[in-house]
Image 1 (cartoon, rainbow, N blue to C red):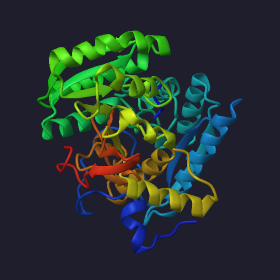
Image 2: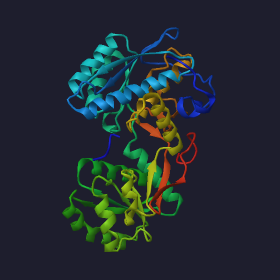
Image 3: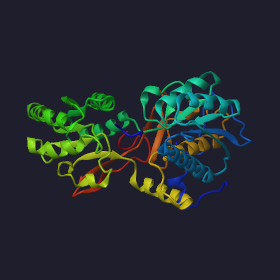
Image 4: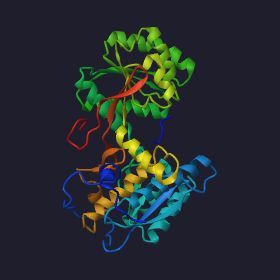
Length: 391
């Protein structure tokens, strides 16, 4: 399965760009009004944070704490805006998420951050839709986006677009897709096809396989034949290191699909766990990552504050709080409306630039990474503004 992929002082100048969130344009940008709650700019801004705390799952409880920590770190690094953060535990349950969302709005919340899981976020959004309050969910599932629900997570479409655009720029635009038959990988394959159509690439076909060792072995002749018959220049794989990828990486070269003859591309990250980097079949392969320098600096700031490493998606909570701060600082009382949230210039977050689109999906700037001699090398950096590389 894909990962899902949440004291007030000014930080020192050295951390402002990396760890605070600012408009990617002049500070006096005017925000159009319309819809959503009005905020009192002279008072702390009430923000609800919905996290999967009070769960029977230790993993959920740990994630909840990391999301809250990240949000409070963002609050501490805001300049000129005070957030009144109120934390609500959902136990990772959709019904409770809906109840907590209603409770938060009745207690004055002007915007909701979270929940994490798609069904929880959908339930929360539906519960408060009639109240005109927007939900910034820590989900990457585009199916729940739209209306008053925005997903902050990195979507398959965003990743696929970045990688296909780069493949086209490198003359490797004839793309064959290999994917598992479960729901997530099928959705990933569909996202790649959309990216191929949108970016002037050529769809060379697709091969599917059951997510098992035998399923991969049985599919190898078909994949090999498709590569040969279509003369594909790239093989775009949806599986990750916790799924079929290790089998594919080991067996495809033995079946005539060699990484030095066709470009391997991954929809998921291939560097987790780090041991995957040594797989011979992945050498030279591409995948997309957030700006590594920014991610590392965020992790260092978080560890300095809390003595531990952040959860991989905790940066979404930081981004949400800091985006709210940047919008409110603009001086528009309707900054948290849908129109305000979807400013085209976007924001600079702890993992790079991002913006919220009117359809509720986030667009994030990503770097292209390649595995070279069992190490990750950035071969095309993440853009620093919209309109640059990858956009």
